[in-house]
Image (cartoon, rainbow, N blue to C red; front, side, top):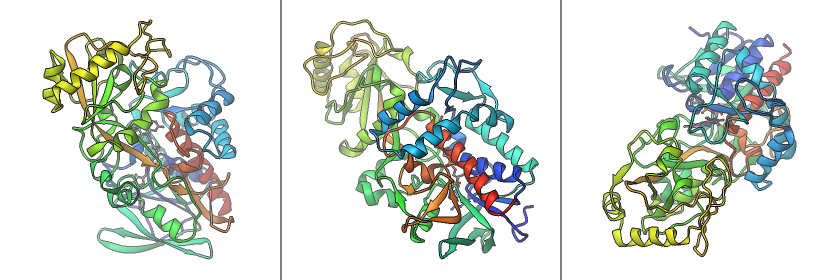
Length: 465
Ligand SMILES: Cc1cc2nc3c(=O)[nH]c(=O)nc-3n(C[C@H](O)[C@H](O)[C@H](O)COP(=O)(O)OP(=O)(O)OC[C@H]3O[C@@H](n4cnc5c(N)ncnc54)[C@H](O)[C@@H]3O)c2cc1C
């Protein structure tokens, strides 16, 4: 039973990847650490338990990655996806520090595996966790327990007591009773506000009712709101988020990885009026998949349809739901509740525009369209081989980018530009410092792991351990 009344050096709020990295690091530095997690033990570890892989800088191939990934290439990839909307100092710090993760994670219980098929061209740049994020987080929790870190489940922090920019205590709701917990320093790693539909509606309007939340229902953004209320300097576009194309049949929360759809590059995507609306083959999927949620969010009724033929099926990891299957485009349209004449016309127009080329799913190939808007720049093969398949798509929100500004020590920066001496933030709640927009697959864990470790180290240093 965790003792919340005894002296606490470092209080960690949120038991996902960032929180555990912080807690373990502070614990190893000798601090008395308590971690508060709003979920039950079974549902602990937030969005982190749904992850599979982490992007990291490395100098050479290993048993688990196929080649080097340098700081410069990593930085250029990030610059490209963010369009330069990133804090270069923090971004480069993250990239450089990511090099240590290849050793730090296994030293704390994580095991790697070789990437499987259908893993988004990541075999060179990303490490895959054996057993995925669930096994990674179980290992971290075991390590934390061995280090004597106190963990309290079903303990949602509702309020932070902060005076003159210094943290004093946190008010939690536990076993139906309110309790105040004091600590010398706090690490806030409580995720974004992606599960808070009313808050999302402030920026997205009623469209947010049709969003599906891929991860935990517990990331309500209460800590983000508290920090902002106490004068933390916000960072990031409130509409900024990582959002993917999700199988529309997915559950509202916690569907995890198996409801994502990676079929768009291999066919066409149309909205409910059977209009294509974006270049499905613009770039490699790991650099584009995270914009598709927003693209669908901007369509009427936030619904879209991925249409492919039999040739495409082996090239992507399917969702857990079987595709809608038909022997003709007309039949497919009826099954998807689309106008058959319009879908046939859209497929014909696309097929006529597809130039002959050499299809290569592993490269930016020369299969492209000519004379249609929007174009399809790569992997544009005619949709002509039955059976035909379709998936209904919804925006699937992974995490939000609005967060608190931090410095290189993971301290929360206040509106007057000064860092709060004993308030640290890590993970989704500060990812917007580095991800102004766009996303690189596996980078959420990189940010959380690097800043979790920094926050843990600096919090322990602050309390003098
Ligand atoms: C389906 C899915 C797949 C993903 N795959 C990958 C991947 O392969 N690689 C990758 O890098 N990223 C991936 N991501 C993104 C990744 O999960 C996040 O970037 C990262 O895990 C965030 O870590 P975190 O610790 O900040 O947040 P979380 O892991 O979400 O942890 C936040 C925790 O805070 C708790 N909490 C919230 N509010 C409170 C409160 N008020 N009081 C107490 N506790 C609170 C929550 O219960 C939760 O456990 C994926 C996300 C999803 C949803």
